[in-house]
Image (cartoon, rainbow, N blue to C red; front, side):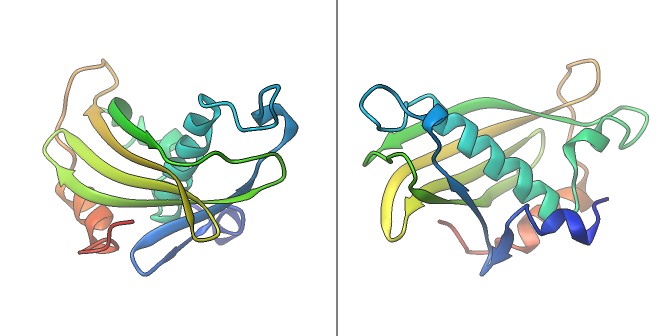
Length: 154
């Protein structure tokens, strides 16, 4: 579903984890120069989106996956804020699949600055159709999410 050129900026999957690097810009910070807490959601979303892209699954094309359509929406998110990031830091967003099947996926995510853990998150993704009703994640797609992550959690 995606071209090799797309992957150049979409990060990479190494040892079962998707790794995406992002820089903290002025727009991401508050008056103190620390990253504003809500901006971490943007970094986590970019990590999830590019993780799927590296697996060959572009979200913009999923609505036409089949006659029912396929959409991923965040159902629940748990975030532990461990340490702050600052302007100009280079962050690594790590993402992997804990569970994929039925009408949901569970993803583990971390944001790190070097070896320092800044954010730890668990994201529950609901799988719905184009009408907004729950639908099962197709088995082949679920297996592709799990194939890279067997036993690998950030």
